[in-house]
Length: 146
Image 1: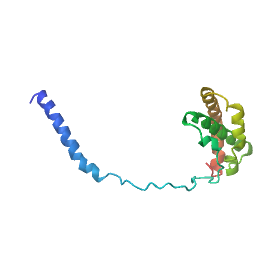
Image 2: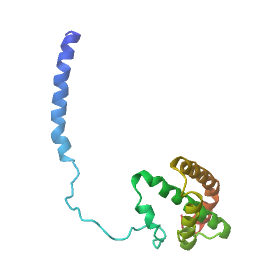
Image 3: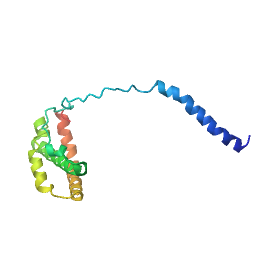
Image 4: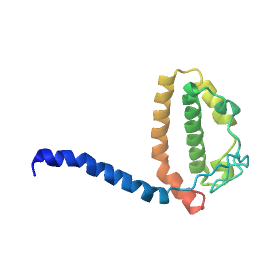
């Protein structure tokens, strides 16, 4: 048989394989739920379920301004990690304090900055966080709060 003969049969073989696989795939398809009920229960975390609510403005931002919420989130995490290192305590009140002081610091230092400057600020904050990470993780793991 020539190469041309094989080339002509190849599409036919591919069609047979695809058609034959259809019923087999249909048998293992996952069940689809039609229940679209929204669960309004509070989010449950592995640790520290009594976390303070973040500032409402973070949830009300236009998607194009999401960078503002990201900057505040990173600043909040950095400040809590610094507090853990200072106190040696990784309890829920230290690990997840009120957002007020981080929000006030964000508004003062970063709130007026354009997106590019906030991106640079976040990179700097993340760099500081990386330096603290091993010690913070060790403290929190020891206290069962990581």
